[in-house]
Structure formats: structure tokens, C-alpha cells
Length: 302
Image (tube, rainbow, N blue to C red; front, side, top):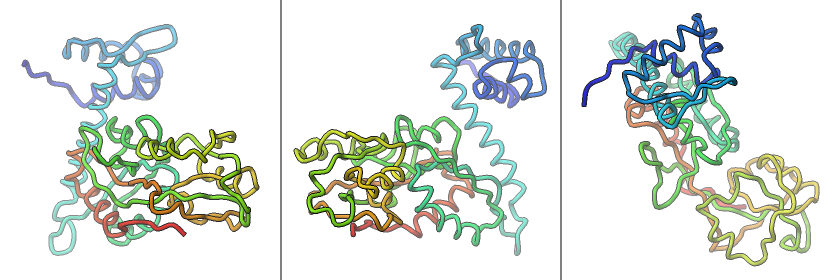
């Protein structure tokens, strides 16, 4: 296969077109012109031998090949940034040790961002004050946080992971904790299982769906909320009951009661995912160490 040389600026152009949705807006972002961006994209398409964007009156949309190319472009550009940061940090600390620093992009679903990450980032700030973490809350539906990592938008994702294939193809990672689901209902209700079900889109993943379907006492959801926090609020206000993972119940209001579902209760595994190349970087390794330091084998129900 003939080698293809792509310059970093060509990669930045592809990313800008996707981010901005068109050549004109990408040109403005890059300090260039629409025609220059269009010319650059055509040049990359010639080098790769594929069409990367569908052009139209409403902008430019990546083809499947274009989406794959942009994902690789983001990851390559990020590794160039890491190369600069790690090279400059090598041997600059006390006694010639390397200084670990620079940006660290984390994607996490809501309850992980609220309750799992804060103590981890607090420890990271003490051990490596030069690291600059940013956390984006991503809905754990569809590609979810793992998709953010695979597409080059995040360095590490806190994700719900399966049992047969704990980590999505092309990524690496590990399980951090396994948390049980529990029944949540208004305090003191005499028959909580008779209440309507309050649910949200991120709940009942494929890992718990078989258990869920086998429970004849669980009705179809009649109330749907935007996220787990809204579910707790609705349950506390008497709108119904919910079945939720333990991490979502951290700091639950006093108006709700948490009841164990018994020995056959479903569980959800929460872990981290990253790319093979980023797994070897100092900033990701530092975060992984802190994640593992705070790892608990299981979060028990109240």
C-alpha cells in the first residue's frame, strides 16, 4: 500500500469542517477562506482516494469514510499535543524527574461526574498539580462516553461496561466497580411495587435488560425524566417508584427510601476506557492510578 503523507494542518482542516458544519465556518475558525478550505479538503480526498464530505447548500456532512478519517485526525492531533507536553516536561522536575502536566479531557455520564470523579480529581490535583482536567457530561446512550474516546473527543471515558466484552473494540480499559440496582420509592409507602414506574433513557442497559424483562411486577414506564436526578425528584414527590443503580442514589433526598432487590438483583459495571496510544501517556496513567486507588469491589445497597 502506498504511503500517504498528511500534514497536521490538513488534519485540523478536516476536524474544523466537521465541528463547524461547513467550509465557510471552518475557514473562519482557521483564519482562512472557504475556497482555501475546500481546496485543502479536495487535496486530502485525492491523497486518500475517497470522498470525505457530502457537499450541499446547507454545509458539508462527513461520509462514513470522512467520519472515520476525522476520528483518526482528532486522535493524531491529540498525540502531537501530548508529544510536545511530555517532551518539554521530561527531566524538568526536582532531581531530573519528569513533570506531569497539560490538558486531560474526561467524558463521564452524569452520576459518575457528580459522585465518582470529584474525589479522584482532588487526589490528582495534589499528586500532579500541573494536570488540567476538563470533564464533559455525556449521555450514556448510543456511543456514549466510549464513543467520545473512540472519536478523539476525550482522552478517557468513565463508561458502563459489559460482562462478555468489558471494553469496546479498539479501546482499552478496566472495571472500577460493580454496583447493584435497588428499588427507590417514596418514604413509608406500604406497597411500593404497585406504584407507576419512573424511568430515564440511560437506565436499563443491555446488561440488565434480561433481568428487567423477567420481572412481571415491573410495569412499563408511565413517567420519563431527563436524567437520574430528575427521577429521584419525581419519586420523592410521589409520582412513582424507580429501579436505579447505586451510584445514582448517592445523596438521595430524605423523601425517598431505598429497598434492596434481593440476591438476584441486577448489577451494573462501571469502568474506564481510553485508546491504546493514550493509555501510555503520563496524564492518562496518572488519572488511571487515582481511579484504581479509589476503586471499590462493590457498592452495596442500603
